[in-house]
Length: 531
Figure 1 (cartoon, one colour):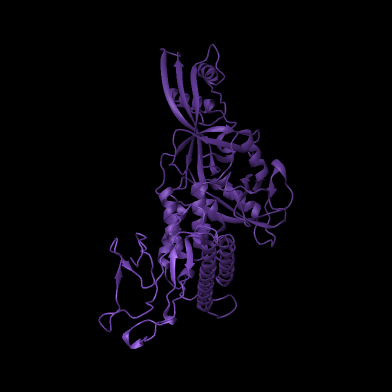
Figure 2: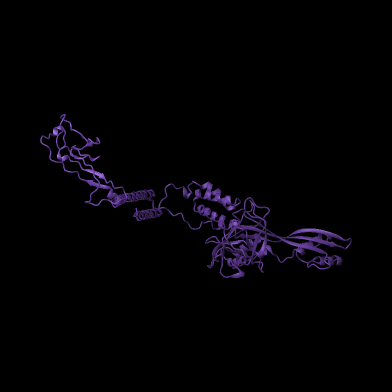
């Protein structure tokens, strides 16, 4: 029993070797990153809209004193952002959520034009009127507030984040500013408030470690031209980043083949609403920067500036369980294992029911599952570069496993049997409990012995093997010493008298017990047999 450990380890080693051979024959299921390179980021792309809620009271004392109260929603900026952690922190550009234009000036122009019926452009500039009284009152309405101010103004910024979900979220998620830069094209960080989207959190986008160094590296830009809707999905365009422009200046775009004017093209994307859109690297699908610049001069703010802004806002970019489940589903989908992709995509939709990309891929996977395009539906996988079927390898491995297991069991049983016998032989009490007692030789047969009468001969002497009378645990009687008396069978020395053909039986005259033919004393009471 003590030797079974090495044998078991030997068997397990053989099984491991068989498993290695079998796994080498099976096509590997580990694949490189799926070809849908933007799918990791587009679920995390959001629309960002910032407005200033202005409450203004005009104190009109030109004629009869009046208090005129109005409230306005003054646009600050809009653009695209990307979620960087499951809690919903968003990275975009400062220009999207912060403006040098003063919303209080806009509100003063509007309330003066509405109440006094004068021609004033409703913009962010300070205007003058020809009427001296009205002009004085207008100038006193503009900020900053003074003792003679004719307007009381309260400005509250309101930022809304509209995620990429279906059906579309018409209300959006309220957010506040966590960090903004000094330049309009510096990264800004927004923090959601007032609502949480399930235990799995929001979809997030991975951030790259660095910007590709090679000039002409292909990238993709993803964003929204308006609030997400069924008829307004996210927009994706391709570009190539050029050398130079490190830091806050940004990297320029340039088509290495010179077929497209990419600075102008990316500038037009910004005008459509993609300011702050994530720029996605073609190597691993991670965000390498944000789209910045203006019309005719689109450029990219690198990921290093993005991570610095996150550090200033004390926000840690990370991915969540929803993203892990989605990556598994993407791998199965883009490697054309549609049958396996269906349950994986359903799991993603259980965690986040509005996941647009998962819902789209699920529909495609259900249509192609089990069809000729489904790699998992092949009945007989073949080796790469040949037509060798897989079943001979599996059958051979099965036979080898059975042989190893059978041989191991047989060796264990054979080795266990000698150990058991040796244990019995070496037991002291077993040696003391067993004794071979030779029978006393029979005396010569009397004359007239006739085998036909059924009388035993001298060759038929019986040997009796009896147990010692010494109980277990007591010392055994030494060899040659006088031990307890034993009874041994004797053959009759002479034919008894009486009826022919029958052996006579003698009995003790004292106790009545039977006597053997050669007994001179009773073995039970010790009385002489001849008495």
